[in-house]
Each structure stands twice: as structure tokens, then as C-alpha cells.
Image 1 (tube, rainbow, N blue to C red):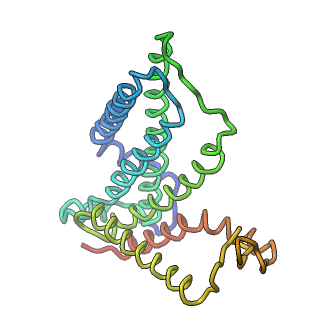
Image 2: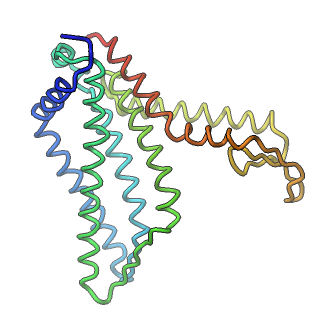
Image 3: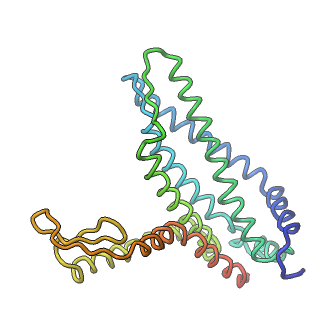
Length: 264
């Protein structure tokens, strides 16, 4: 096998992955849809008595199921490596580590996201259709200018894809219980990061210190800003996109090198 990347070989690998796991993927999609149906049924019953339904309250359902299901699915991206016989077979498949990484990325990121968004959209709109059949019900739909849609949801999605990449990396590093171990490692890293920030705030920054953005810092006295420090605007223009987009490629690169050196 050549070490150079091949689109034709990648396509064959994607098809092989589907043929080997078609039943599992199909059952997973049905299970995901079933879970959404159950959750929306509970949501409908909780609001049935008041006859008032707010679309904004479904955003929490969307994010909670997306994160939990996405992380579980991503942590199984390379779960075959946890089994010695299957792992040896998988490593012997004539494809480069990059092609195997892209194949895992395709199913964990693209296929899962499309399936989830489609399932959620169908279940939500069928639920809304049934709600509107009763003239006593009031369904308040969120408009496109809703703060959640414009600001909160995109930031949550940035975090989701970054954590997806982290759980994919965990599926390569941990041979067994990859999901649980990745959660524990993530919690530990988050704890250390929070403690580090707390140390900086308590020991290095002045009292009554606050931030308005990545480039503006203020020191307050009696609720009024007495000192304002501003960095050049270009620093914020660089830091903000990096904070949003750098994690996925960095974690995928780490996953690639881990796959490249993987031995069973």
C-alpha cells in the first residue's frame, strides 16, 4: 500500500465502514429518534395542563441530547482498537492513518450531525403539528432574532465540535471505557483550568477587576470604571476566532499521530 493519500481508497474505506456497521448505525439512529420522541412526549405532558408551549424551551432538549449522544457516538469512533483481534484486523486494512481518521471524522461529525439534526427537526415539527391541532393550545415560536439562536447556540456548537474531537481522541488513547475515561480526564482538566484562573484572579490581578471583551479590561471603584486598558483591535480579531476554531484541528492532529503510532 502506498503512503500517499487516495480519495478512491478513502471512499472504499467509508463504504466498508458502512457495510461493517450498517445495522449498528441504523439501530442507533432509531434509538436516537425514539429517545427524542420520549423526551418531547414528556415535554408535551408537562405543558399540556396550561395549554402553553414555548419553542425556546426545546433548545435545552436539543443541546442536552446533542452533547450526550454525540459524545457517546464519538467515543466509539475507534472503539474497535479495544478488541485485540478486531483491532489487528482494522490496523491491517490497506488505508493510511489519515484516511482512517477522515473516515472516523465523516461518521462521527458529519453523519451523526446530519442524522441528529434531521431526527430532531422531524420530531419537533410533528410535535408542534399535533399541538396546533388543538385550538386551545398556544404555541409561541422563536423568531430568527432570538438571542439564543444568534449568540448562544453558535457558541455551544463550537464547544460541541471541539469536545467531539476530544472524545474521538479518547477513543484512540483508551482501549476500554473510552467515554467514561475521557469524561474524567475532561473534568480534571477543567478543574485545573478553573483553579488556575482563580489563582490569577486572586493573586495577580487588582481588586475590582473586570473585562468587557478580549481586548478591554477595567478596574472599578464604587461601580464606576476608573481605569480602562485596551489592547489593539487586531489582537481580539485573532484571539476570538482561535478560541472558537483552533481546538478541532489541534485535537484531530493529535488523533492522527496517535493512530499513526498505534500498535496492538
